[in-house]
Image 1 (cartoon, rainbow, N blue to C red):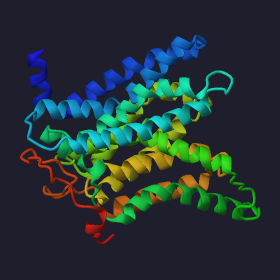
Image 2 (image 1 turned 180 degrees about the horizontal axis):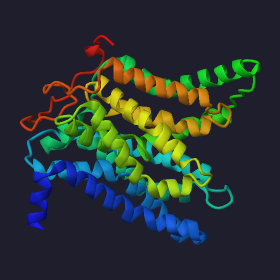
Image 3 (image 1 turned 90 degrees about the vertical axis):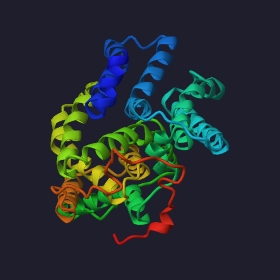
Length: 363
């Protein structure tokens, strides 16, 4: 075991990808198999599948935290008040979101509010643990996760992360209707039920299925370290290939209609590039791509009344191409760029402590 940990400490990047892949597959493939075989009627089995899937999607950030802690375990004397206060606040918020999200997925006659609340108690510990680790006594973990609570960069990019997908969907639909002669945006009917479901999905993704859990790993750990050796373009194309492999268990269930190649191979590399662009533009802030991911996935709900069109997909591709050309993403970032990991850096309670408003740099 000691030799394995030493190898991991000496090879953090391959260790991260290997451990994340193994933990995700081990936790996700059994539920996917049971789902495909139809063995999902037993309540206890459903609960186990829920917990396994929630833990699996937290593999990226948890593995990143584990390797970070193994590599630099030194502790410092800091106040624990912020740690526990942030834990409680995030735990309560995540508990409410998980309960609401489960309520939407489970038929009303099956379970009441209280059982769903009880089911969500251990689930909500995951985001609370990660966010509160930004105030950990372990200096390396504070530095790693600091941008979740002290975001960097220009406010514009956080607004971009939140609203670019709705804007692209609307523009894509408008272009499609213009070309076909239909009245502009005439068939969009945003009911209060759809808007509420979209907000719940956004918060659920942010806490559980793509936000801090994934981007804390892909951006905060992997992209930052890869960019110390490679350009943002090479880094994100590598991440795209890896994420295609990692999403196999999810895609077995999600893309049964044959759209797998169109989404993962045709469109997904450009979306990954946009994630990397947002991360670098906010000077290495995990919060921005986490919001970006939540916004993207919440369009699955909003898309019931605001569908994604081919024109919208083309706009996303063009936006990614613009990002590559505008930022010259084929060139390596400077070694002192905040989105580039430096082996010699040491964490302190003040790392990443600048609020957004104090860093209104040119867009």
